Length: 297
Image (cartoon, rainbow, N blue to C red; front, side, top):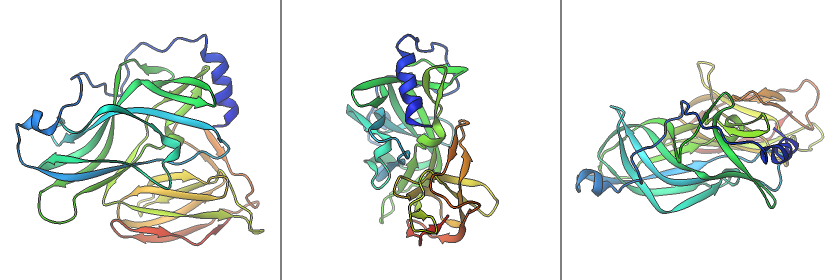
């Protein structure tokens, strides 16, 4: 996805109307998020932390992908949801800023086992900005847009809140703009393709060619022992990358110079040597931050 596509969208969306049909992304209809005490009447609760990450998109200087976060809920094993954080004032976050640091949410959660963190997003304050221009985001896919004032995006992750003394649970979430945003029919669509993990590890490094120059827009994949891509990113203009929300385990970290994202966008590396596609095996412990030696691509 290139800056030119966003600029083309700016020219075309001025005369296009947002989609009005409901899609498969769940929409929150229960009103404003409530507090834990409102929901459980003061039932036992414990502290926990949720961290939201993403990554820059190479060659997109000056572009922001903004989402307005109303709050977070925790999804129970039975499919219900309990409040975790309710923002009194909407938190508008530029996802492309969240590589070297996270947007943090701290609060108390009812004791129990959960299967996902649900993010409540205000559709009216979610947009892409290029300089002084603002382009609305259409939620869902081009053939199945979602029209709702609040969009609920679930980040699947099984974890327990126990209240036992010790470090509180920490959940890392990656919105994955690279895999979630698609330009089509003169508009920008977001069909979230998200990742999350409890006590997550992260891995970072740089990709460069044999001359020592940075390789940008190279895809970096974290592949588990079963061959599944657990999470991925692309390198920034300086060749740097960071992959977040990785459960502890053994991974093959692969560099690919041509890669098709979940929404069908083709990403091609710039500056790579012909035929190069380096990889390395890494064992990640819970909460471990690993910085790998530079890949020569």
